[in-house]
Amino acid sequence: MRFTTSLLSIFLLVILLLVLSSNPGFSQEKVRVYTLQESLDEAFANNWSLKANKEQVDRAIQVKKQARAGFLPKFSVTYGYTRKDEVQKAPATVMEFPPPIGTVVLPRSELNSLNNYQLVGTITQPLFTGFALTSSYELSKLGIDQSEMNVELEKLNLALRVKQAYFDILIAGKGIEVAEKDIEFRESNLNVARSFYNVGMVPINDVLKAEVELANSQQGLVTARNTARLARSGFNTVLSRPIHAPVDVVDILAYKPEKEDFDEYVDQALENRPEMKLLNINILQVDQETRLVKSQNYPEVALQYDYIKAGDTPDVSGSPFVDADRWQATAVLSWTFWEWGKTHYAVKEKESVKRELMNTKLALEDNIRLEVKEAVLRLENAEENIPTTKKSIKQGEENLRVNEERYKAQVTTITEVLDAQTLLTRARVNFYSALYNHHLARASLERALGKY
Image (tube, rainbow, N blue to C red):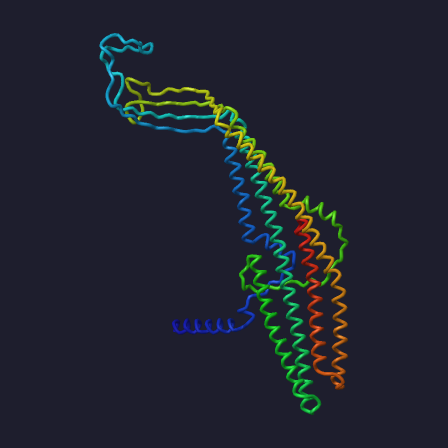
């Protein structure tokens, strides 16, 4: 009885799951609707390319820690074994050079062991490296600044890609809307043409023309829908979402005409652009690299302390010939003072690199001015086109209405009606293009100014 009840419960559960899975509301994922700011925030949080750039910052921090370790003492251990070919013996007569004070060497006595083990612990503290350590440390700090600027540059580029993907969805959506209105009209127009043909008012050619135009509009709708799907996939990719995830965006129909000040924009761009800051960092890096090269002109001074254990067995516990342990401290000065001008030419190389960067900076300033000018002109062009294209929609609607009435009165041809509808569709497309191009032009200007 319990077995039968369990089977019945499982059967009912399977039926319930099948019913729920057949429900579109259950099986379909909920559409996520984004505002423009939400799109930017999610892209900054999840975009894979931006995350990869942030890893460069962490890597640069580790390089800085490595450079800082160069100032600290170094500890090392050396363990060695030496095998002598033979045991040396003292001469039978008095030695020419007496042994160290406190030792007695009998004639023909052994002076060494065949097996010799030595363990040396060394502490080395650099005192002066010709400013090489300081320059390396400063370079590592500049490396962090450079990585952070690369992140800012990637964020700027990412923000522009997000805005482009966002408005691509809106443009594609309006394309579908315009195409559907166009099909709706052409279906109505075809019905009128067929009615007139059935009562002998128009030739079959009018019906054929209306059918051809309807078919073209239907093809345009298919293209518009595919464009919209691709735009959503592109948007998901920029935000590092699943490519097929359902998504939509909040429409932005309002626009704000602004008074542009080219000189002020250029000043902002030169101050804010990460590319300019990167070049300034690169110039500082070359200065430190030059200082690092020049450090080879100076001697290096270090203090070394050695603790030594020796013996004729692996445990280095001494032997009749050596003490079990001893220590020594050494001040070391090393100076390579002549390498046939190698350091001199290396300095000249760095000076050439700096001049190259200075020229690159000037070229970048010119390119920034050109980018700002182009963005301002695009913005002005879009602002001028919006009221013009909006007015053309009203004119197109009136033109279509007049031609429809004239066709119904049979004082014009269907070609005039079809052409009027084509003009109206084009006017609607032009209006939305001008509107969203204004937003895209604003996005390009913000990118040129180094803003999100």
